Length: 424
Image (cartoon, rainbow, N blue to C red; front, side):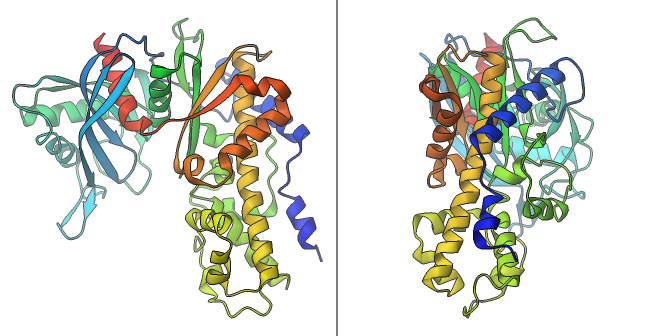
């Protein structure tokens, strides 16, 4: 029977492993740019970094799931000031509507979104609009993106195969609102645009929250020969990752086995489930909770341990005893595994960041800023420090050239920045 220590060792990542993952990620970038098979989709955004000359008031729509936000932003002097905002869920049982189901048409969905602008836009205003649309698209221009397929519980009919911004523009026209959609972007791209507004060294941005993705500025994109932000869809990276039996179990029990393997090791949607699968195995082996009077549903039910609980375990170990009714020895085991899973996630993310940096600057000679948004990066205890430590292990003194910068609301503000860049 494997001991606790032996099981824990499966999640420990060495410096050599991190460096190899970095090299593999760099290779995945470069073979994809050459048009060869790669786990990185490398979707062109058709937009570069802001010049700093952007100014004016803009409106942004952020649709990343079953909630939407519509807000105003004032841009000028390399600053972004958030104005009034309207938030809404696309489904509300009390009010009797559901704009996520297959019973809903694109006409109805976008009319609902457009209705949220009525309160924000006065009759005498004329505004440009940026749209953060975090679903799979085929993009051929900054305002030309076709929805390939819905995800995240949405199955509205009549939108797949069409440009969401065109549907939105038609809905806006029906309401006689003087707003012109002119840019459609991914939330990761928006995060980079916001970071670059105030930091000229920002060439990489990442989301580490419920999901995970990274983008960067390709200095000379093959399509245009000019700088362009590329949405890598980094969640799909899987070359050389140190999968354990628990990672494989999680993957096989997921909605999309074989897909998003990196995301399933680093993002908020999955970290709690990895810990749960470990604890289930430990209990079955008789290595934990032997004398516990715990509620079995805390372990048996899929996703019964979420990432918020992991954060609470790490910041307040007494919460472990409260959840599992266990002794001090078991508390330590749970805390050790929770901390190790979070550390591993940070190490994997750091490795992909280094791979991207090595593609941009092989000798790491320049100052580089990575803009990061997302609840895991912002709120998970120790996550930021673990990324910094991993980068230092891999690069030594050169790690001082790499700055990590929290970017709040990149998906909303970034869409406004994109619109301001098109207006210029």
